[in-house]
Image (tube, rainbow, N blue to C red):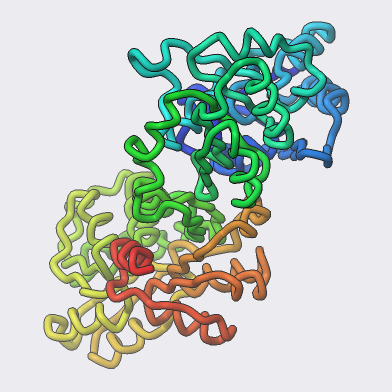
Length: 485
């Protein structure tokens, strides 16, 4: 018998997930997720985890609640560690209680991992505090999805005071505002609707109970939305920190390996962008090829590293072999600042560093220091460009090239999220070719495309994809290009 975790994934911002949720997702062998949990959480799953979409959309249920309950039971009885991932918190209008009760009936062990709930977080991102001293000393959360059918005490609701929050109620917005006015609340009471809060698609409409329905309809808002009623709505502009971020409203797709995506993902999120991560390449280590060269490392005059992956492949191999890197007497050369930093993290300062992240720039930096007869070792990718090896040999160097790793096509796990992407960032020719395989050429042509440098640009040109090129071939250069628009 397996076990089930009912996991709250937060309101949509991929970083609004708890540490415990992340830890448990890594343990799961099967995960069931819905549309409100977003796809950002999928990056925490192990590669062998089975994935099931069981989302519910207004008027279009992919699975009924009974079918979801049955699947939870079935997967657990098959021995899986099941993650039932839900937007927000499992027990706040998430029907997590029904799922838990079914598991109890079946004798299946479960745990609940609470999530950050949308009534608080979405309004926070909309600049609306749910409470405020002397203005709102309480808040009250209602389901709005079936407001017309619920036996609600509208008189009590309209006169209770504090902040009123309605979830999943956009279709009933007119009914809700009408009932509140009908039962004594002033038509001039501030009211706001926040759509897809905490994401790049967040939109907000502010009005009063008298006109909020008309304003929201004119603005084209649609589910999922949160309705908030009360004086705290007046803070929506002054406290509007999220929508003022430089990249707010942008959904940026990064296409590198999972390991290399972390730095740029965090920078983009801090600038207000929503990040869609499609790891179009994976690194397959072939460090057994280093066996041929390990006993000659002390003889080389130069160790040339052309990528972070090359650095990690080499030094991880040496560590596994208990090789003392002090035996290496040669000068280290790096293709750019990221590779330079990776070498520094291994306790070595590269003396030759290319200004730009291209082989031509690295050779420009080396040609004035290498001499005919110098021995050069280059641990790099199997499918790397031949340029650098060729020009070093032309300069009279004795060059040993080792394929310490190769890039292969990555997972297509997040490909369905590509539809909402505004901009795609490509950092190598292999990311271009693999993304075409994963999401299709025409889909890419519909987006704004940024190339980190000219070599990647040539791969885009080959497929007639329009693109912009960074002035600086680094993560910073990519960010600067994004900020131009």
